[in-house]
Amino acid sequence: MEFLLAIITGLLYAAGLYMMLRRSMVKLIIGLIIISNGANLLIFLLGRITKGHPPIIPDGSKVFTEIYADPVPQALILTAIVISFGLQSFAIILIKRAYQAVKTDDLDEMNTIEEEIK
Amino acid sequence: MTQQLLLYPLLFQLFLSILLMFFWKKIETQKIISIVGGFIGVFLSALLFYKVWHYGTQTVQAANWEAPYGITFVADTLSATLVLLTAIAGMAVSFFSAASVIPARLRFGYFPIYHFLLLGLTGAFLTGDIFNLYVWFEIIIISSFVLITLGGEKAQIEGAVKYFTLNILASIIFLTAIAVLYGLAGSLNMADLAVLVPQLKNRHLVEVTAILFLVGFGIKSAVFPLYFWLPASYHTPPSAVAAIFGGLLTKVGVYALIRIFSLIFLDNEFLNDLLIVIAVLTLFSGAIGALVQKNVRKIFSYLIICHIGFMIGGLGMFTKVALAGMVFYLIHDIMVKTNLFMISGLIYRIKGTNNVKLLGDLYDKYPKLSLLMFIPLLSLIGVPPFSGFWPKVSLIIATLNEKNYVLLGAIILGSLLTLLVVAKLWSEVFWKKGEELPVRKHFLYFKQMDKARKFQFLAPIVMLAGVSLYIGFGAEHMQQLSNRIASELINNQQYIDAVMPQNN
Image 1 (cartoon, rainbow over the protein chains, first blue to last red):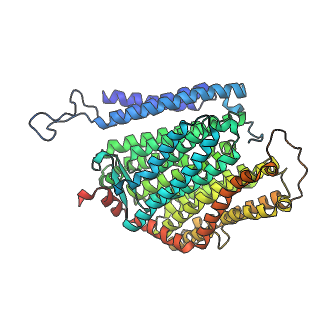
Image 2 (spheres, rainbow over the protein chains, first blue to last red):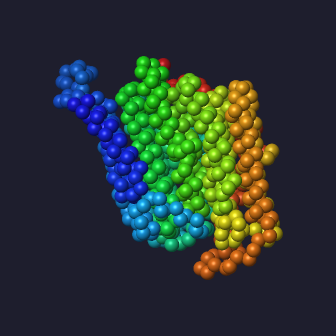
Image 3 (cartoon, each protein chain N blue to C red):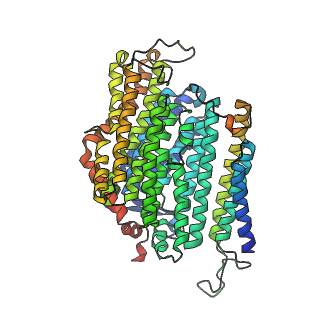
């Protein structure tokens, strides 16, 4: 299972980076979404996968007696997911506004910044 | 209760931004709250600084969960100093925003978002937990995205797309680095990591993690070759926004690099050499970029990049003298860069353009204002006894001690090129005979403003110029402060002890 997840994480990073390197803005956003999912999966993976052992200390003992699933990475992923939600929704609005302003999806044509600004 | 003093500057910014949201439509009220709040913020940060200076490093464990289990907030001298500088720059920019940002922008929540940005900055300086640092970085970038796009002009949106993409990529790389570090060491508390990471067996993976952090923070602090988003975006938002970005946002990246490389990844020759190489290239590329630009704000943007090189070089040498020089430079740079972008706003209001080709004879028409603008420019170059001079002396002494002549050459050449850039700027903008520019309609020129507005416009520039002068002329105090910070950075045991006293 860990091996499979490791491969998937690598694929997500590669696919995300590839998409980010494309010229289209929509593909850029898709790339960002994919790569941030890859990062989340990586955190999950690096907390070591333990199946069916919640981090609860059994009755009568004071410390963990056997191996347990680390809850910290899951809390981290939750935070990271929420943050990336916010960023992604901002990104989608931003590319919509950019498309309205520049009338193109091509990132290479976004180089007209020589005008004066307030 | 007095322990909680550490959190006051942080909580106060949060309180201010929430309070400001209740006055969403009332811009005038927002201006007053923001300015008064700025003063209180400086007061609270000064209290924190006073306490740290006299009683040593302060810590707060969130919800009384002892480190390394809970989230820790730490204020050592470096953090307290940066929090104070953030508050001072923040107050000046509140003042400046009230006068310079047009109402159409202010109506869409400019001030609440601005104080969220200050909240993020303060939090990033105070946190002692690496994942918490990530969260503060996200708060900073989300607020900065809003500030950079607010107004929605074409150029702004174009700049924002570039700014946005690279900053998100930096955050993802930072998150990846945290994940790998947690997988290796099993902790997120920076003090705990400082104990655990040197004991790790898998040195190669530790090095890779360090590089991931370096790339993530390197994008944020705009070092060579990761800086291209900065000159593409910093000249697009209003000058008040550019001032706070230019003064503080890249410096948060530098702060994070200092923390990571003084606590967690220590004594690695490869990393130190890499930092020095980056510093040299950053100094060159920034300075040469500044030479060819034609827009005042683009010139200043490239100068930001150039001067990041001084700090990275100081960090790369990692001796006490070098670190003291670096910290001194950081202090000086925050004040000067904030002021420079405000000055670009002032020039824009006087002439209606920021294009060097069109500008001219400012000195003829506004001699007093020109002299005021001369102070930060002199500090920037580092003409003795202005503030940029002293840290460079420390840095040069450090390179001589280390026999690192390449960096020595880069520092001297970087300073000379800065001098050349500023001299060119001065002769073009202030001395050259300017042409008559067509008068812009619906544009409030500086000379049309009433007295109160002019005061609001100039007060922050005078104030920061005053702080710069103090840094220059009171260099002895600053040197003391930087020496103390440098010795704290070199001897990180006291940071660890302050966070985890139960270890002893």
